[in-house]
Amino acid sequence: MGTNYNPVERVWSGPIEATTHHPYTSVGKFFETTAKKNYCNVAQIFEPTGQELSYKKIHKMSMKMANFFHKMGLTQNDVVGICASNTPNLASIVFGAFLAAIPISTLDPSFDKDGIKHVFGITQPKVMFCDEFVVAILKEAISELNLDCLIYSVEGSGECSVEGILAKSTEDYFE
Image 1 (cartoon, rainbow, N blue to C red):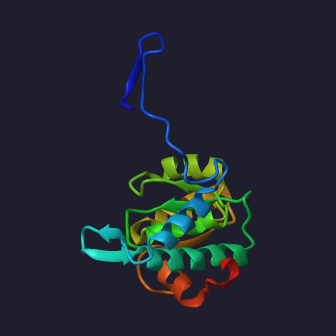
Image 2 (cartoon, one colour):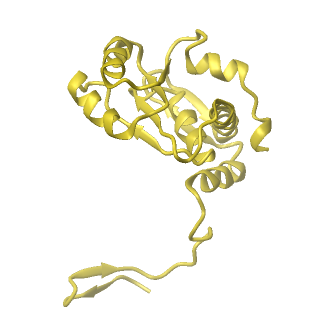
């Protein structure tokens, strides 16, 4: 069963394979199922430092983030904003939002204030995660947009950081 080419539609296709998940499975549920099947395996290697995170670790961190979002009162009608470079904690924010069925709005941290205002003026995030070097410009943009939005750093270990959230939060809500 190789590939086929339809010259009329100009489409290549391969063999049809059985799906492993229901077609309406959420991204959060798909992540959770995959993570639990691969708990002992390495899920992420942060290249700059070589730090490895297992599926188990990312799953537990993501569950804590999902619980944090729930305790904030966020729902599927809210948005989690991300304006950050890749860090070891980024996956837990993204998958935590997906587990809680909350959409995310991502933006590269190199955007200027006008770019930030444009994107987040449309998506209206209730909580924002960003690199520390973006905090000042993000605060300006949020203020000018009159957004009621909390800002957390993806770096560091203070109360207003992902590490601070993970230290306080539990994963019990979603288990």
